[in-house]
Image 1 (tube, rainbow, N blue to C red):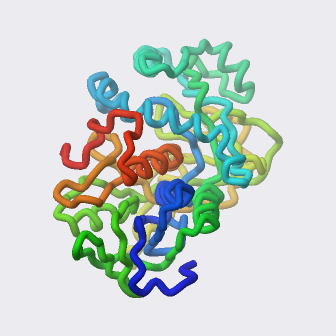
Image 2: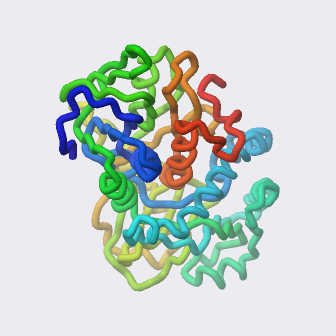
Length: 385
């Protein structure tokens, strides 16, 4: 909470966006003694970072690979390496933040049930191997050994060993708590309505008064296009409402993050024993224009899960909710300085921002403090579109 009168105080940095990336940025900056205000238009962690299924991705996603082709995959490798490097941070993140984030990294399984699916998976594995990710092809027997619950129709697949899961309800709040303990000021329900600059100080206009900062970091996810327009920047960030479902608790069954080569599916088991079923199926709008669950998407998503895991057919479904997925035309992140506005920075990772958030926080902290982040950010430049 905003726990002191900000008045004319000038913060070193104002971070706009209270999801995992924004909270991670505030955490790293405050850890180095920078004064930070973390602003969120709603409550912290209530949009994409808190509504996703908790997947930790580290492979080229199969659907865009089929749609976009090998040339796209080759160009996307820097973004894939970003995910892989962020996944390394996840290993020790619970200890660092003093919170059990329920991180489990048993690997990701891409399941094929048609021989015609295998050549594309093999090409995809080769791209992943080219940036140091030890993905490998699996035979049907390999898959059965790793996942005894799998359909008898399985013909093979892929194992990506660096993938896994975490609890999205815990991650951003853990970053934010540590940031606050280090002196950061948390400002939920504080939308930014305008920006101006006076004598090298950025002034953010909000309904709760002006917030002043020497530098600004924009990590607003779904709100990024609107934030960018304040600086004359048209960010081609799309938003789509997608669904995630959770079942009753069952005995330990699914150790991996599971995908299906024949359609939209992510499937995994939480630490609590519930099964989480997603994959990007679209929600719908009701008569009031609100995003609500789409029954047709739900039926199709569940049918796909039962196709690869027939034994779950009688498991009770507890809840389905709607989250927001944000994308870019090339599926790559947007990271760097806002052209023509010194001291204003952008940090956005499409579709898989939850996975990328620990590294995103470090990279943005380095940029703000004038340090080399240790990687080439040119492929992610905000003005590349």
